Image (cartoon, rainbow, N blue to C red):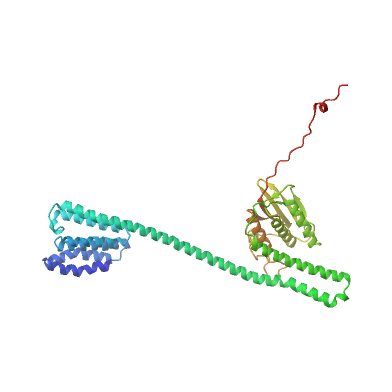
Length: 420
């Protein structure tokens, strides 16, 4: 804008004498433009400088019309100047420029019509005609201005969405890389250990089996079986976590029956572990697949057996609470930071994550619990109270139909004793 205004100065200085004006008259006409250009170059704010520059440009338009004695063709300069000023996209600057044009035509054109119009007729009428054309141009510019603002706003929103999407993708990629690294490190340890045990046991039985008594061979086979079950449990958790994406809307499970089955299998797989107390309200039925509920309770019981105090008795309790069926697995344990415990429901996360940890596992058990429960629109919470650690799951319950009380039909003959 300043370059355009400055470029008008030598043009106006030459046009003045060429159109019959004296150098003095031309120099006086240039004073307002020089003053406005100086203000536009001054160290002011953006809006004052924009106002000075825009008023300077329309002043150049007015001077050209004046120097050419109101020649009609020179009025097109106003249209070009207004279009350039609209590029600021500032309502204050634009309104000031339009006000200048209106005053120049409506006041100066009426008072000194020969300086603004080169044709006869009513100056006020011509002022209204010129004002109408300028306003029409303003309306068109405002429409395009508004459309440009909407387009830019839409572009900004798309840019923000793109940035957010990129940030989300980066976060997911970082999380995926973390999980991949944890998977490689954890699997290499957790799978290699039981495989090494199975291989060692198999080699011992193959090379020295005939020298071992029945009790030693049975102990080795039992150890091999335990290692195989450990591998199966790890693989089952990983596969379940990968497949847990959709729920069967028609699935229902008897919580008592599934919990009883889990307790029996847990006792068989860990014969030396303390018994598990079972206290579930009869008739507790939840909306979840039986295999999924079995996996959830098996993981919670396994977690309680591994991390509970030695000799403590895990407890499985459950029942109905309004529209929810709840099951809680509790065990006696040491102090627990509940905030940190919530992180245990993330994949490959363990309370003891060191290389010398005392408990086996991939850190997938509680993650599988959370995944399965969330798929079936349930929730998982963990709490620690009075030395007990409890993991509670809640699932939508299946409403129980009221049991009809059988009635005995009484006949009149049976109702009253014989009078004989």
